[in-house]
Amino acid sequence: MKNNSNRRDFLKKTALLALAGVSESLIYSPAHARMSSENILHPELAGEDTIFHDADAAFTLPALPYSYDALEPAIDKMTMQIHHDKHHAAYVSNLNKAVIEAKIESPTLQSLCMNASKYSDAVRNNAGGHYNHSLFWTIMKPGGSGAPSGAIADAINSSFGSFEEFKKKMSDAGVKRFGSGWAWLVAKNGKLEIGSTPNQDNPIMDICPVKGTPILALDVWEHAYYLKYQNKRADYIAAWWDLINWDQVSKLLAEAK
Image (cartoon, rainbow, N blue to C red; front, side, top):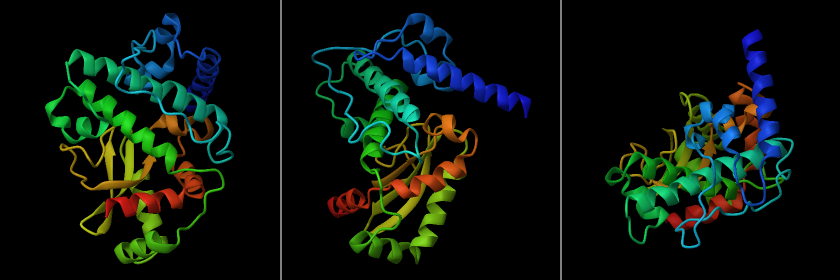
């Protein structure tokens, strides 16, 4: 218990230091980059002395569709700011560097993910990180409804029997994902399926055993919830259900068809 308490205190302190060091240009301090616990927990940030900037960069960090504190109390302001401004920003930066190093011409995020087996781990991991987070922000909203209606509700009932059964299976996919990763709801051959992936893999990657068009994504990396929920991933997931933007999920389902 003492070790867990010390770890929580350490993470909170380093998170506060990290947040204080985030500038509008997203430049990292070399000393902080070497010492931050984020580099130990999250290899996507390791060795990042600065965010990579290039006027001709293929990929850019999308703005959040709401304020940092808009999802409180389910997801706190500090977690959202660090998650978006540091973690997602690092995936975008590292992806731009990896694409240049690999000399990939006219890359698109879709093509990089769909052909992940052809590229380096740096391209695969960072393309996945950028794709996954870009989707994740949009399927949440302030005051999201707890249950869907219309076509998405019909599809869920048809595929899983009931919304409650779907909710249980989706939650289990997130809770039981060992280590870091994601839980997914995908549209496939006119039906909906649930699965999970490790790290930043996703269902459109050719190397992924979970196949389909993602319409709902749940981030279960520690950086998505640890500041507020510590090791209580199940509590984070339970709160997340009240944030879902079912209008956006319905739109993604319609596009998948």
